[in-house]
Length: 201
Image (cartoon, rainbow, N blue to C red):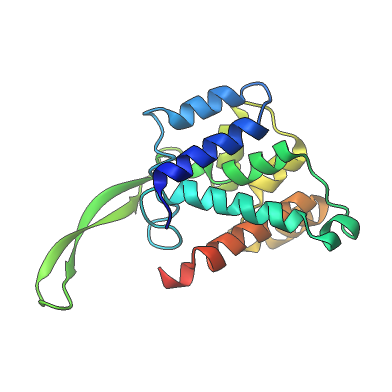
């Protein structure tokens, strides 16, 4: 876990340096506003990056993983994947924007293993006020501020890959048609399981 304020500053720096299309400034203003908890929210309730600032940190991890993946010689020369820096930043930094204002802090009773006493402990609970799905909700939110290319929209929509709840035939078709979706999914899984260590949370 790194410093939330440093992550916030890095996110804004990468965003401003790469995402310049019409409406991008308004989306960033929203993310920075008091109406959004993007920079303080966790990435999940109890799995990967389930702590304050985890969502921003996870988004940066996915950005780093996606950049690294797309720099591989095989990916560029054999698979022919070549995407603008703006597209890479958009799909990586905003793939989980659907989690803004999704989790809230509550408390529950937990037995202290040392004292044997029950204690109130904080935890994140799921509180969805816009039940529009996962990847499709992120596409919906981003698209309300700026236009996405079809490849960008598909990469965000299908970044969960086969770990999502959709029909596997649809997922397979989408991943086959849109290579950036495959790359984003790989980056998301690398960040989740190897950098953030979902199985250890």
